[in-house]
Amino acid sequence: MPSPENKDIDRLISRATKQLEQQLPFVVYRKPFDKEITGLFQNNPATSNPVDFEERGFLFAPFEESEASILLQPDEQLTADFESTANSTGHLPQPVEMGKEEHVKLVQLAVDRIASGELDKVIVSRQINAKTDKNCFEIFIAALERYSNSFCYLWFHPATGIWMGASPEVFLSATDENIETVALAGTLKTENGIQPVWTTKEKDEQQMVTDFIYNCFAQQLDEITVSTPATIKAGSVWHLKSKISGKVRADFELGKLIQNLHPTPAVCGFPKQKAFGFIKENESYHRRFYTGFLGELNFRDNQTNLYVNLRCMKFDNAEVSIFAGGGITKNSIPELEWIETQHKSQTMLSLL
Image (tube, rainbow, N blue to C red):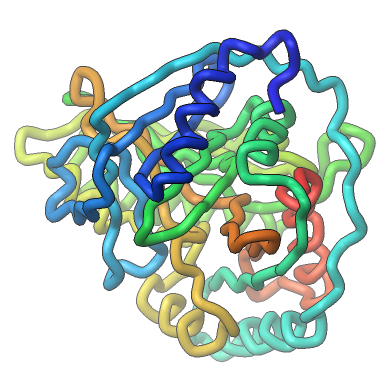
């Protein structure tokens, strides 16, 4: 729980604890590189499903477009400052080996489909179940301590249960005039803090995401700019990241852009519908809100800040479900893709 230096968030966590005991919706979150934590509390259990993304609230959207998004419409808001006191990455548990054979076979099937010309890229993932003796608030505080460069959140709604995460990826930031996002793809493990040397596989994967987003932006935006890919660290892995931005046209519709973007090749694949069909047919579990998106919708000054729901977990009493996946291309090696999911899962497993 909070260290002496962080006592100012005790009231916020206490309020969230009471909300959970009463089974009422809430979300507590912190944006990347920010010190302020925000708590939003809804004083009734009603489920609000946004229709056209013109509503105001905190949005929690699933991976599958056919499933309902949840909009938390707060009756109360609390904020608190949080100063991280962590000076290490903590203990990383041994990777969970269950499901290796199944995942390697799934990756090989994806590679075969790509080789046949059916797909260009597809993201395949797996679910990891783990036990913990910590409660969700303790794990959330640990995430705040460790992942200052991520969007850290703790969410509860009676319709979804408890979810928590530390996402490194912006889905969409919007004002009345400008739209920004990132193309985040390619993954390599950190080795003593030394930046990796990227191969063609990772570069092609990231470029595919960049091209997809650019084409979506071009339908409704002008003056689109794309930055040179940069190497960033997220937990125990490195990624390639480009920033993409543009200015809105007079006929711009936020809902239309969101529908065109989601799910991006970074969480689904390309072509989108064929990759989605492969995932639905072959993944052995239901993603629900993993690889969906979440965040502030039409908040202060009509600003929207949404994040991809990566590096997350779902709580079920003393058991949690953690999710990890990777982008499969023609150059993917199944055994290495399995190892990549192990590395990615450490971001959440290390908090338990």
